[in-house]
Length: 518
Image (cartoon, rainbow, N blue to C red):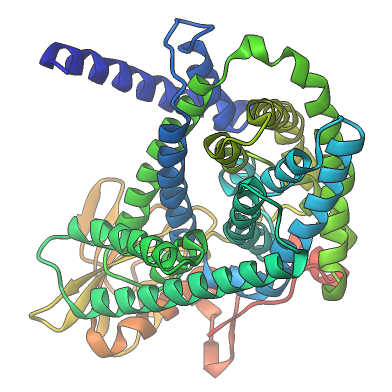
């Protein structure tokens, strides 16, 4: 490749990125997941569009796997442990039993209704049984859900990739498919190895980053992402689930209160966007639209059964032991959006040389596009109709910590967002522990040293200096005041944030529990 060709390639890539970034604004207004626009960009510059010819399935699979690693790492870093913890049992069952139910029902529909051979039908059923967190939350960013429901969706999207990948690889392998009990044992073993690798590497990485002060703040995001990728590689090389390993490692790192954690999440979010854009554009290039005609009807039939039968049945069976309200079951059933993962997994049988693998890819592609167009715009409406939005709850504070190694302390940067109950609280009413103090307030672009009677407002940025022993206690106190106001924890009582009208109505229906802030 000459320098001239490199310059042309850089120009094309930069223009694609700029168009993709602008498309996010369109998707946020229309309610459509941005993945559809990225796929459209790929199709537009592909063989039936501008004329760029691309058919390297192997390269697409490798780049797709790498992108999924980054996306899962970003998802784990942004997942709050206190939200996902109560949802883990339901999410685990939904990611195992739910996947099995979905695969069986969808494969039967593909075989009996669409005329697909059993091996190909099982592959289709496995491929489309994985949900996509990015697709779900791109359309729900303006409709906050209860923490328990959000936790189930996030955990399911992070967990169900692992068993689905194992199933697709097993069904795509040459020779007869393993007996069901051997397949279950293999899945259990790979999940156990992946979970062990992710937990060990995540905890070791969090311990190291908390006790080794790096010379530059920009190194922390790089180190965190490197640790997460290491977890994937270690899990995969140990013949375990690398996808589960990277998600668990990132989950631990994201909740470990590491230095510069907001900057780390911002860095990971940027990498996640690049991974999504690159992956979807490449998948769009791989598609040949004029070849999709014969596969549209089978895709619509399989997708209809998946959406209206397989997904609801898997949700209702998986959540039966947990007494989940019917409203949440309904939303979970409709929120099973498919996105990057199914299309990437559809390349596995193509690389393995499975018969009719191009047809499998086309059916999955059409299914994802059509049913994302149907489900995406209606998902926020359904959440509001079922009264599952928590828009009135106070927003959490944004707190960033920078270590002061020589002073044996920490500098906390605190953002007071709209909706925070820290608004109207005086500095003295924060009642920070001894060894912590608010040293500076930035308001409307101007900074000043606050006094005890300074009243805090929405949009304020606070600089809080805390000694090492009281750093965690100071952050807990700040978050308590942000949720409960000036009376949080008054006279030793638990710091309970006042409930909003929405939360009170949900508490009466048993949808949410009162949260105690320590």
